[in-house]
Length: 258
Ligand code: SF4
Ligand code: SF4
Image (cartoon, rainbow, N blue to C red; front, side):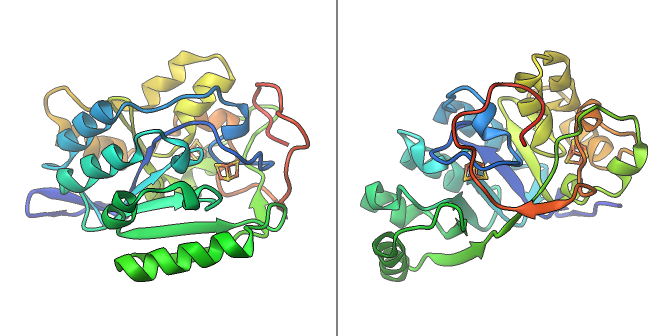
């Protein structure tokens, strides 16, 4: 896929930033491997620095603050400030399961521009919480998107594979770019696989954000034809769909999320 440059910036679909790795739910086949990751909170200053590096050269349509469960971040308002002030994207979205929305302070509702709430049949959101979300969004002019997610795709490859077709057919590499602790990744999987597999070499799938020639290196990354190292442990878009469900208890760390 060819990426276009407008006004000096590469046009892309979206960019994610994961504010925390952990979550208050334990969805089986969580795409970001959250139930298997240690608690981790992104420092707002790190987010700010990464977004400021990207803003002159990248133009995603939307910046998604997600996780894990982003509402678990103790300074989510500072993260929202960083996201808005970076002017990286015209829309700053928070993607959440919604359970902690009642805890959010007024500044959260003033700063978020779009709230995307995933609705899971195995963990239904209480009616009162949904009602509060509807009310706060209406009061503050926040665009609300409710996204039912009755099925999840199996994404973990066990055993690992060397099939280049998985990367070639993977839509996530065009839709799920991520800034993560000083690096840009084509998708959200490699840094999280690096943790669950105990394989820090997978971090090399991301390109450094704070080195020269960033735009050219971004273009090379976006238009690469060779699979990522992390693709070996991933089924991309080729995995079967399964009904959404929760782990009964926290799973042990490892490559398989089932
Ligand atoms: S709500 Fe489920 S899918 Fe989303 S991050 Fe948490 S565990 Fe993963
Ligand atoms: S690791 Fe590879 S196959 Fe998996 S989502 Fe990323 S690009 Fe797609």
